[in-house]
Length: 201
Image (cartoon, rainbow, N blue to C red; front, side):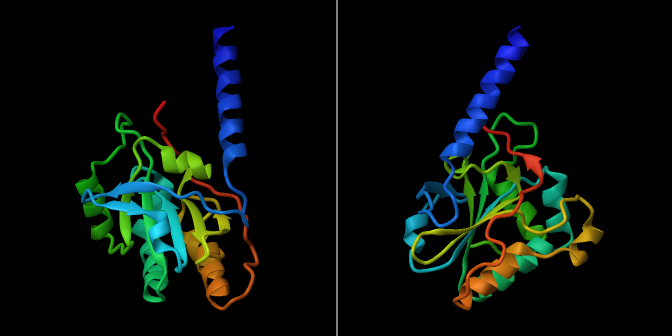
């Protein structure tokens, strides 16, 4: 009986968090977080630019797939070189077995030639829950007016196998290129895949 109650509560909590998540076309929730160096970063400070939000956790095999292969760093570099702001966000709670301290997280990214604009720490999970972020990676694009224009996966093949990357459609790259060209995004909502985010309970 207790297990059923806990499962029912978990389902309700998940449903509430999903319902609270913004839909594409709505205003992207603002947030204020510290970066890995302790500097305060606010999403609204980047109004006027396209912003990519990437939920990440190096302990996740799906994240490792996209970083170890060079796919995520390459997608970051293409975006940043075009003037896009890229914010990597870690919502893993501190007590999780695969939580990395900020300095170690940055070192992990740098070893893979990652170039996000900032690595943000969200151990309390407030930003992640505001967006309904469920997986690592979970990707979002915000337009210069502060509207959410993409939400979903990094690409079209939900696997942890690096060989699938070259066969997949990179939804973030495609969406950014369309948005920067002033076109509507072809696939604005896709299915995110990866490891479940370990939110603080």
